Image (cartoon, rainbow, N blue to C red):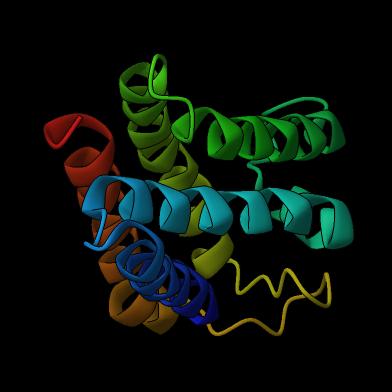
Amino acid sequence: MKLLTVLFGTFILALLGTMVFQGKPDFLFSGNLGMAVFIIFTGLSHFKFQKGMAMMIPEFIPGRMFWVYFTGVLEIAAGIGLMIPAIREIIAILLIVFYVLVFIANINSSRRKINIFKADYTGPGMRYLYVQRIPMQLILIGWTWYFGIYLH
């Protein structure tokens, strides 16, 4: 949930910045900037916490470290793409699909009590999934749809 602070904080700062420099708040820009900064942060975390992230991927998927790095790069690219109006809508659609697919890894992680930061099995478990992760996924999907598709 700490990353939601990045999302909302960036959004609010961008709204304030556009009010000061443009005379009115720019919701489309601010919403996409918030998600862009959020997803770039999560992409970078794939390189810092790669061992814990690899533990999240189900065992039947080969090349787990490849997927950790690959999805990290995809997340960074998606963040950049959200800021390019010509491709924003397709990036938002792909990002929503990504959020749904990555949720499978979150279920696996919660079920196995994986702590991605320590790369061990001391994680919060299924309660985290129900209380924090599901609501966060719904916020991310809704936010991406609203700012990347609906307002676009």
